Amino acid sequence: MFATSAVRAQASHSQSQAQTQTAPVPVAAPSKDDLPANVLAGMDALRSDGPDDAVKFWVKGSVLESSKDALTQANNLRDIQGTFGRFQYFDLIRLQDLSSRVRVAYMVMNYERGPLFARFVLYHATPGWVPVSFQFDTDDTKILPLSQQ
Image (tube, rainbow, N blue to C red; front, side, top):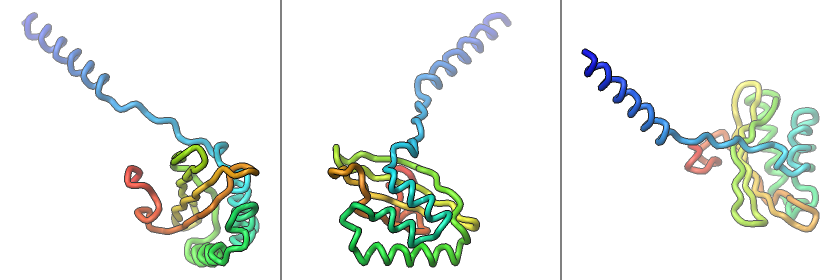
């Protein structure tokens, strides 16, 4: 009886030790503080003033400032707002540095009745980090990197 208890205790200890050694280490969530001020200001503007004002913040100081594609994104956000209701807040899913000057921010934008997934490609230019492209979609597979799906 003692031998059986000792074997069980040792097996339990070995199993616990194996789980400890193979358990994945949690990764710290990215911080919204790592996003450029104009991205954060755009999110605030989207919540309080709507898509047009949000896009104005997102394109300020970037190559998108005179782009018609930016206006298209504002139209897309208006359509989403018509379907999902008002924008409430966003969660930053991941920040990925592609190089010393290129960073990609993946996020989910939470509306009253559904999520909208977003990707901002940021470039470190003379004034600091600015969006050089942004994309929105209700289909997470079109926005998120494969490792996040």
